[in-house]
Length: 99
Image (tube, rainbow, N blue to C red; front, side, top):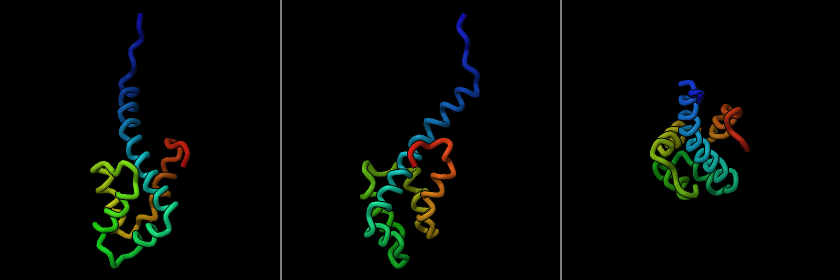
């Protein structure tokens, strides 16, 4: 007799799959900012429109960003909190490997 998975196992699998994309892309954002001092400086420039800073950041991220992650990162830029990406990733440290 086969054992059926519990609903919470399916729910966790869905959550993990959705989170995986976010983590991968936010980690790519963090890496791009860490590795490129010019990018960090450009992102910190409040005189430049957030949309232009977001375009520059997205060009620095291999494969770009999904629409939802793009909006989220844009919100961080508009709020002047793009430097919080690392803290956001660390907040999920139990879920993330290698940050």
